[in-house]
Amino acid sequence: MRRRVQGVLLRVFGLLPRRARRLVVHAVAPSFTVGAICVVERADGRVLLVRLSYRRRWGFPGGLMKRRETIDEAARREVREEVGLDIELVDEPAVVVAAGSRRVDVIYRARVADGVDPDSAHPMSPEIVEVRWVDRRELPELQHEAAGGLVALARRVGAD
Image 1 (cartoon, rainbow, N blue to C red):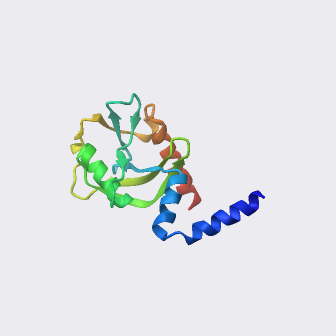
Image 2 (tube, rainbow, N blue to C red):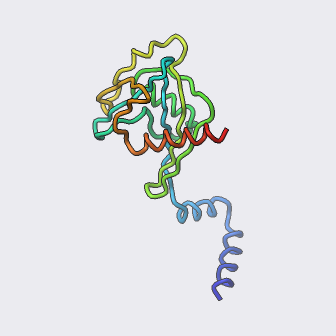
Image 3 (cartoon, rainbow, N blue to C red):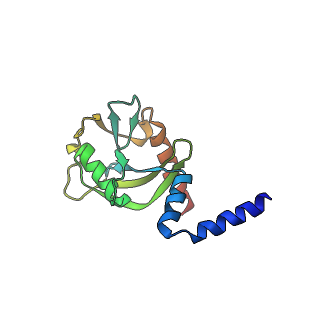
């Protein structure tokens, strides 16, 4: 009986106009936020950390995508807005899906763009209270997303 009802519902769904089918899918499918996180590296191997006004632990520059923006554009924009640096993205990103919080993070390795002084990084947004370049071997306590991002990047590099 259940199978028959499902079959009827699928046939009805197939008869709906495309826009109506999309509305149905959006109504029943989970929605996720998508953000970019950038692990910005200097030539000496140090990485750029930021401390947010509303978080205790350190993280990497990043944030949510805007409508009609690619994830690469979001990554570069977020770093520029948060710490005032232009960056170049390195390699392919890693992706972390957090089903519980309905969040997808795209984690990039990045470097400071040519001609930009890494030491010019400073808080540019009210949400950033501190910026610091840190040796990878001496990382402070990281936000959950930042730690997960590093693990995802390491796994991706190890898989290549």
